[in-house]
Every structure is written in C-alpha cells, then in structure tokens.
Image (cartoon, rainbow, N blue to C red; front, top):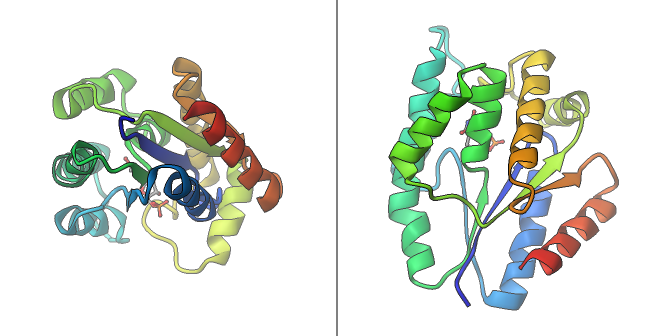
Length: 205
Ligand code: TMP
C-alpha cells in the first residue's frame, strides 16, 4: 500500500499533542512506525527558522516576512524529510502543514488567500496531505488551555480576534476539501476526541 501523509491541525490548546500520539499509535499498529514531524520545523534548518518565527521580539515582523519564512521552512522539510520518507515507503504524521498557513497568515494576518495559493503552487507543486484531522474548538477554550502551559510564543501573544479568524479560515479549508479535511470536535472529553480520531482513521485509511 502507498504510504500516506497525515497532518493534524488546530488552534493552540486544541489537544494536538495528545491526538498526534493517537494517530501515531494507529499508524504504527496498521502500517509500521511513521515519521512523526512538525511545522514550522522538522529539520535542523527548519527548526532554526521556527525559532525566528516564534521568538517574541521587539521589532514587529511583517506579515509577508512571516509567510515567506513558514514556506522557506516547509520547502526544506518537504524536500529533505517528508518526500524521502514517503519515497522509502514510510508513513508521515505531521503536527501542522500548509493549512496552518491559510489559517494563521491567511485568516489571522489577513493576507490574500490567492497569494498563499500561488506560493503553495510555486513551492510545493500541488503536494499536500492525504488526510488532515482538524481539532476544532472555540478560540477562547484553546487559548485558556495554552496559557496554562506557561510562557507564550510570539503568535500565542495575539488577541482572541486573531484566533477567531484562524478558526474561520480552517472552516473554509474544511469546506473546500471535505474528503481530505475532517473536522473533529475537540471541545469534548479527551476520550471522546480520541475515539473520533480513531474512527476517522479507520474510515479514511
Ligand atoms: P505549535 O506547533 O506549537 O502549535 O506552534 C506553531 C505556531 O506556528 C502556531 O502558533 C501556528 C504557527 N504557524 C503559522 O503561523 N503558520 C504556519 O504555516 C505554521 C505551520 C504554523
């Protein structure tokens, strides 16, 4: 069977870390251990770019700079980690991928959708996950959980309206690609969310 590329998306505090483990366990049991990775990051160089993106700083970062940095990190990640793993027959599970750019730079920063599409086409040539699990919860709930975890990064310092726009952009992505992009109600209990994730994997893979 052709190896698949699965991404997990959601606002901060949506429970991505727990559900990534659920996905990893499922894939391991059925298809062998996947390459588990994350964005921005996933390679030493891309992790360096991640810290540039996320470190709080006094100089404001232009939204386009942010957009180009996430795509720079992504290109390195896809070319040196994701595509080689898939080519060798290994499944890949990523904590976020391009949908996060539509959510955060498109929704949150309000950059034009079509420019992100153009950049995606240019840099990735149509490459996208086979399946995306979107852990959806109200921005307020997610932020409350994220704030309990401690120090906030540069993006977590944004206001609630920013995360509400990100959530709406995820919704738009889900509507545009209902086969690939599955919404999971992440405001329910951990057991219920994990059960829905497993059920989705059984149905879709
Ligand atoms: P997280 O992976 O710990 O949730 O943090 C990554 C942060 O980076 C999160 O706030 C979302 C943000 N991000 C973007 O703004 N654009 C992107 O394309 C990606 C992958 C992440």
